[in-house]
Length: 581
View (cartoon, rainbow, N blue to C red):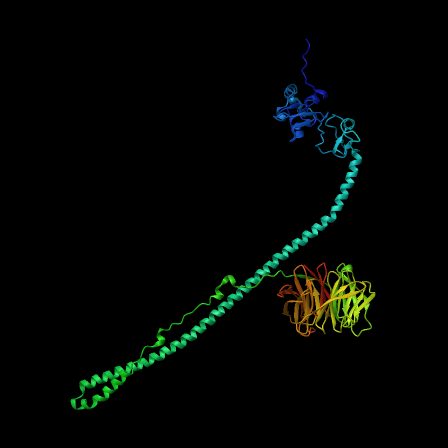
């Protein structure tokens, strides 16, 4: 009798391909129902849902035929029951059959070549650049045909893309470093701001305590005045009481004497002695005191309403003050008299008054390399002021006029004699090709239209102080006069004075445009004893003092500010550079 062989269920590759979705390689089982398109190609419900999205039609991934989606959506499309039933029947066997899933959604390693999801088994060696999808050789000739589609080999494309990606990564290193540095700078600013806020809170609390102490002191003064007034009034009360007590005692004693004598004296004696007693009693009656007027007057504290209006109580004001950090110091000068920023070389030009020269200092990574560009050997002293125009021309104030030099130190021409009288002490450049020249002998500001080869006087403003130093923001000119320790701001169009304030020891002056303020250099005493010079900040609109920016200077004579926020101070023997932060 033949032995019955056990039945084994095997599945060919064709059977596997028939019961699985050609896109995702999932079995037509459960949610992956097989749905048939109009072109009779079958795909699982989930893949068709991914393809259709929000559209109302589906393009077949294999033949590109378009199938309209019914109103009920993909789930209402025709289900291939034969495939679903077979898949349900044999699902448990498929668990043990490895299925190669190589759809384009999976990652592909460098050593593996993915196979096409449409043409099963075909390896995808090409990339359709137009559609940005990998394709096989059948896709190349059927659905991604040149020249409508740009085709490249995947291996070559990958190498090119890797190079492009590496270049992009390298290009971002600089940006990454810049952002890291900026993040660190912002973090430092946040830390400094928080620390500064704590310091300002402490300053406010200190001011509040001072006000409280002053109020208490004032209260004690009022109490003392009240105490003195009351002591004086009480002294009068006591004096009056002593007088009354004495009179009252005298009345009591006299009455007692009269009663006693009336009762004890015999008639012969009584008749002779009663008259003095009556006269004494009458005198006491005639001296009866009137009402004491002071007894109805009561001291009362009447509060002054004005100090108690707390909403108008001014403890101080909040100012957005600048802050600086020390950068460097350079040069040994006989007398650093004036200074100007030189934008083209990112440096500063300094006049040495006694050395009769102009020294240029160029920024070189935070240190300044110096070289002498101009030597004024024919004059007794060097220039009193210097300015550099936007074109790079150098203007020197030399008492009798303005000397004009090129940026390389070549003398171009002089503005003197007919245009100026002696006393030219200060100069500054403005926008629109204008220069301003201050004359301390005439107390005037001359406005010139300036060009590299000529200069034309536009108008002259007469000011009420000597312009030893001047600065401009194009609409106004700021003037400092050392002799009277005064700074003033004058409108360039009308000549009207905006304000005038007293500043002890004032020398140089310049505008700081971002904060709309004036930076003023100050010396202490004669300017040569101890490091007591400073730079202070004033409001450019009102002249209100805003704070001290730099202290401990030797003898600051002038100052200049460049576009990078570097503040350079001609401190007589050297130049000190600070960064505004």
